[in-house]
Length: 139
Image 1: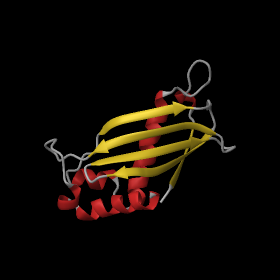
Image 2: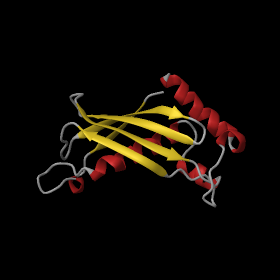
Image 3: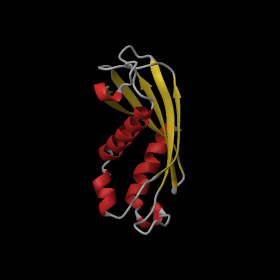
Image 4: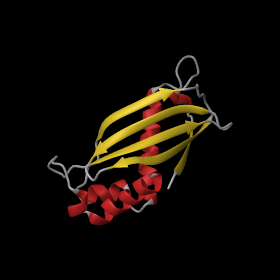
């Protein structure tokens, strides 16, 4: 499943030169990730109610072209790797003309309310299977 999330660049997201500030791309990655999880039946509020936290452990962005207000950015999200404890997502962001403006990735782990790693396959098998299915689609 390749999820496409659309974000309209807001005026406040731009800098003095009228270009989207680089920090916003990471926020958009989170928006797209939250939307992906929601679409597979695992919205963040459900995860939090189950005591599952999913902190970012790594993020990488390569900026290819500028965006400006009021551009629409299409963000493609795919599961690049899932090993049960760590999830790696890949993002390709493009403008209305289809030009890639940013290529990025984020890595996440899964922790319980006490901050300890969770073995999803054992503790939350349905969530594990949903993520594993997305990883298999990539392969």
